[in-house]
Length: 284
Ligand SMILES: [Zn+2]
Ligand SMILES: [Zn+2]
Image 1: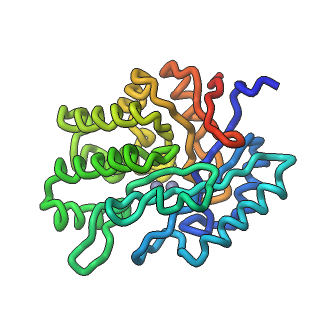
Image 2 (image 1 turned 180 degrees about the vertical axis):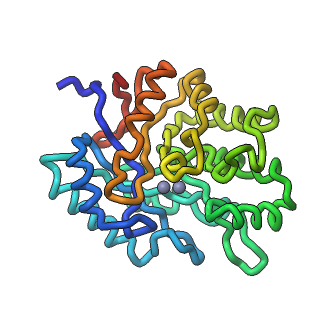
Image 3 (image 1 turned 60 degrees about the vertical axis):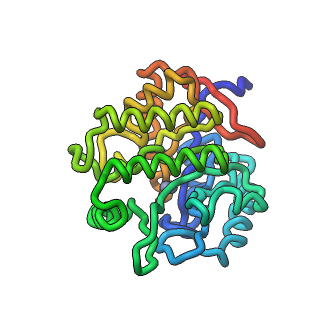
């Protein structure tokens, strides 16, 4: 068998252990029904403060046991992998905090960008009004300062914690439809993104092409935006496909569209995780 041949995979998914809807087995069965080659679970890592959507520390062992059981149960039909979408929060938590778990792979994500005076963490992706609250109260309403801080956290995470995959690279644009907060074509933004891409390239990171924003009707481009995908190609940055699944029906949500886009843009390969390593496969 030509191991370099294209295969459908998705390594980014959330079950009811974090903020997904349904048991892990239902996701595995759906992936098998979609003839996927490999499927990875990546529930949100626990964080040391209250959060409405991260996994609880006390459920971590059960999560690992559950996924490992599925690996065996479905081994004749699909390759199942155990991962986690780990929150990077400077000086608080990151990928290294979970190194002892021996996960198959890690996805690093930045969802928290500070704490309000009452101690509540600011997850900037928790709705547009909440985004505006954080922008105003923690960044003095200065969108450039916020965006710069966000990408600085991504850079720090990549340099110091080296996750295998970087989650939804430009999620800071989540509520920016119609250039509501900023214009991605402005030089200051392009420069910040360019610096981050340099960091990704130097650290051999994998950027996921994440379909969640379009699926939720928040955007007309994936995470990251088309111009960033173009620059990934120019800089030879590795990419993988990701549905950021939160429901068993969505194990492959919009992945064919990602494949089409990458093919149109001239990408020759995407990265998949197989056994112990990430490696490229042909996109055609
Ligand atoms: Zn995420
Ligand atoms: Zn996710």
